[in-house]
Length: 431
Ligand SMILES: [Zn+2]
Image 1 (cartoon, protein in one colour):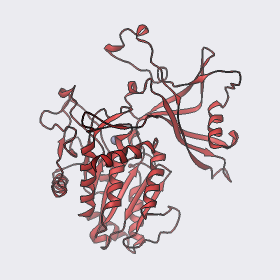
Image 2 (cartoon, rainbow, N blue to C red; image 1 turned 180 degrees about the horizontal axis):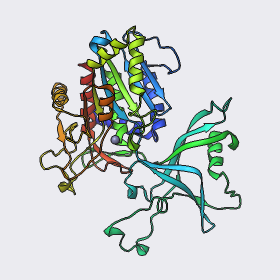
Image 3 (cartoon, protein in one colour; image 1 turned 90 degrees about the vertical axis):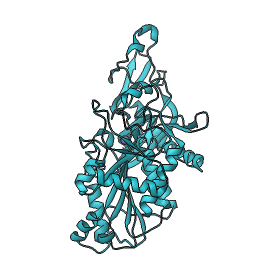
Image 4 (tube, protein in one colour; image 1 turned 60 degrees about the vertical axis):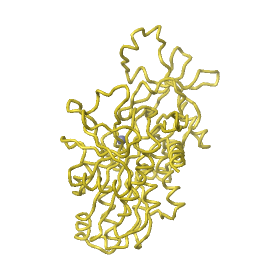
């Protein structure tokens, strides 16, 4: 059961090399489980106990099941996570030549990846392309996934970089440009990548106007460890919590409250986009749900007053080779269950009120739980929790499953924590 869930998660990650593809994957799964797509531009006609989802800009998705109760009394129960992961994006006009022989691509860094982990790995290219549409204001969009080893970022040999093991500085404009191929007689530098995309999409190159493309490791994740206790895979942050929330929403019963799964993009670059958490997106959707259920604006505010959210993003487990980096008394480890994250700085939205709810839910679910604080001399990260809490003015607990190697091209998690987290989320939606 636990291993099956881990294999299922690895499959989900493999099908989701970008935020766009994760939304596509979630849509396919939700549709196969009776969820109906509703569009932002259409009038909504929602039924009690109905199951729906709506997407934004191809990279955010909000799914919900309408509760049996009156929404202003029963409120919303939300789980939120993000669809994006740190990595590289390909710039326009990316072709660059070296020694008149090598073709490399001009890239920029998205978010905060552990750069050294991206070297010497066969990489694929995926994302979305914008195509000529019927009018300039309506370009068409198509997803693309070149799921083959097409580029690689080669290391400089240690013989030419003798001090590399004492510290590894990486210049993002110079050292990390991926190699695409070698020049041959057919090579035409202009629009070289666009032509590859056109071939892949089986269309003319001049139909492609622009693209949002990233690199990703093509090797699939794996279950590993002496007792197969680990999950090694890319993009666990934060598609793991997206997956766990989706699984819980699908498998939970419909009760009084309206249960919502919030999958937003661009957390790794600050969330300040139309499809990110620091936007009007979620509040607009909750308002529209309330209105479509026949309520007024006061109904929305009453519903919010009765709502609660889990902000689900991963937590740093104590590192076996860097025990000193962690807080002296709050020391989560892999395999010991979901982690509640708290920070006096407000970079996490947990307080004692929603901490009590977290603890109560873990006990009800029968799963162990842990706590995380930053070391007081370490700044740490943040999540969509604080901004969502302040925009909706509802209690949001910040939690996540424990993880090692956060923001590496391959992160490390535990098979058991996947099972525990899904169980916790299901208990939350069922409460
Ligand atoms: Zn994250």
